[in-house]
Length: 82
Image (cartoon, rainbow, N blue to C red; front, side, top):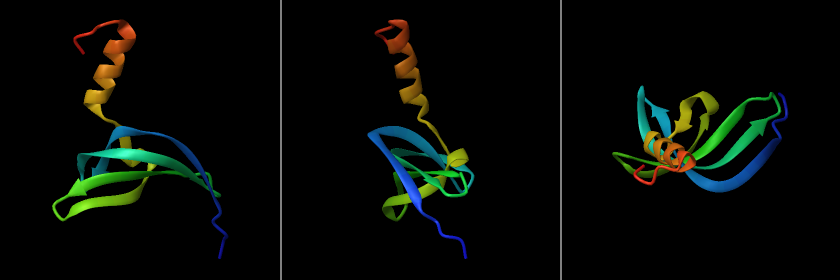
């Protein structure tokens, strides 16, 4: 069985969306982890019908939160209305 040491890269938490059961749900990304096989996973806090959760998601299951992306783009363009 292969050893799975991990390297974790921390940063300021950011708003994201995670793909859960075919639907994008809001969450907060706390860290990216790269496994020895080169794959990346993100640690995300999110809420479902049963309450608050924290889980690791494959990189393709995580995207920047659409409203945060619009606000960041507007700020970069100098648009104060968002």
